[in-house]
Length: 293
Length: 280
Image 1 (cartoon, each protein chain N blue to C red):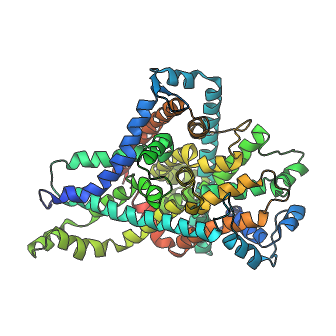
Image 2 (image 1 turned 30 degrees about the horizontal axis):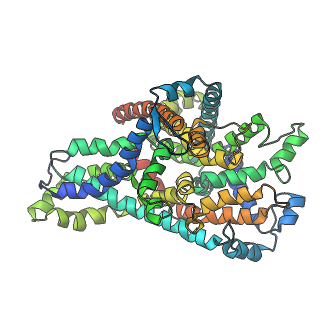
Image 3 (image 1 turned 60 degrees about the vertical axis):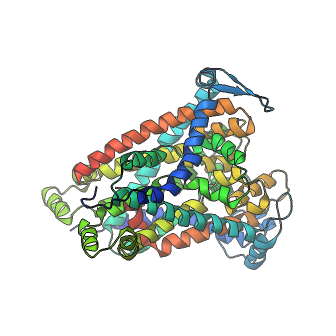
């Protein structure tokens, strides 16, 4: 906090009022409603609702379909996070090392940051299209009969591919700025002490980069869980039939396609708890990072 | 110092190809005719149908009601992007100013009330949010499209961090010279925040422009469709048609990508600074 501050009986409240109003109406109210309706079963035709306690939760958690989707979500999140982080890091290290053409590489790699997930999904769909998709043809040459949208595994592959592609620029930006924050003197000292580039990376650079990496880990997990919604929606086109979907997509399907408000809300609350835990991890880490600097 | 190896350049070139090729292919393919794309696949060459495809993508009336054009969706996307970015900057600057520069009783409480919103993304509370919007009769309106998205603390968090880094001496000096809260905000804080505001504008514009789930739920009236929503309806029309309009789908994708990408590339330095510095 600041050493000197204004004091005024009304002004700070006036300044805060617009933000607080928006937050109460569009954040707290819906969140409370989600918790509330997770304990009820709503009549699909709108004639009242019945209190059912934790039935919606147990229905969700113990259904084999939900567990299968949870399992896919976990694998999906792990794969997207791993590949997006490692490719982003690799490119950042190389972009940090080269001198000639550095800014051109940087611009090209960053440019894709602004592409929206649904557009990434659309372009991805074209590349994995049965008729015109080059990836399907390449896979064909290798003896892989790829059927994205029909085959569970193939669709999952395409989803992971597109989601990773979309997220690389973000990780690249943060890793690069993290690398450029490492003082030249530290690098030179490391260079004198150790000739082996790989060993130098793992013993000097990576530990210094750990705060950035941990921050990105949380961001990437959140991205895989929530922001990939559009990619999945574009790829499965509302027909979840035999296609892999994530937990967030199921919340949407049950709530808007299945009209199961109670079940969908219970799933929302479960996800809220997951995000809550993730964010607490992140906050704890931010504290640690301050010590680091 | 470290000597660059050819391998470094090779990896970077492969990385750039991986990132940029799909977009280039999307653009090149959009300049061909649908039948040609259908028979030959995706293109890397220029197709000479640029004008036709893009005129048609922008002006052809589509959708179920046959009312919405690509130009209309482009306009709506701009309204959403700019409206969201401006709204976010105004709301969050005022709130951050109050939190950092004023001593008042509920300061800590307000801080936590605002920052709790960072915990839950919109995606986990879509169903109740939709119900609230429908109770307030805000479906199919620009207000309904923009205002609920403002209910998160990202902007406030950025500005708070920035204001905290402004030297205390500035306020001390201003107060000695007799400046009140308004004067200090307008004459001192606003001018030194210019770069920060620009950076946040870019980040928020891209965020608003790229919104998908919320516009999809909020807008059933095609007059309010954004480009992202349009992409969804293109794909829905596809199922069943004989030769899909690949070229127009790609044209729409290119239109949806161009404004935010241009913004990020042109203002790269501000954007990166804003993104990486404010997350500390």
